[in-house]
Length: 178
Image (cartoon, rainbow, N blue to C red; front, side, top):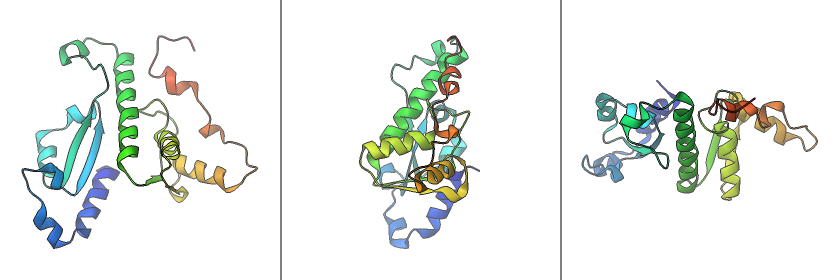
């Protein structure tokens, strides 16, 4: 499973019985967890997966602006599809920043990201811009470890892994010259 699935399973063990009693199958707003899903993942969920999440997690798709109908999408090149996915991921991060009280950053990819930039970096920036508190758990490695290491020392140089990488954009725009 994914880290999201693991967190949902763990969260369910913490739900008081009186909370469980207030959950209505017909009203996703009463379900204890909200999970925003970027395109195309939201469209690729199976009926079985959605059924397993019922009464537990409201799966909320985040579609990119201007997404064409499925028939047109099937004819598009992979770079265009990647750009729509990156736009959806950016919008998902913006929405989750707006809807949460704080951000916890742990792990995080430094390369081969699905968005326009690595998630931990973009989420950190969005949270700071929104004046939301951030808890960085650097002990889990990944981007969070690099961010935490950098923030520990006022004189530390910015790690290469946290600097802009042309790959972030070129992967989604293969027609651009390197």
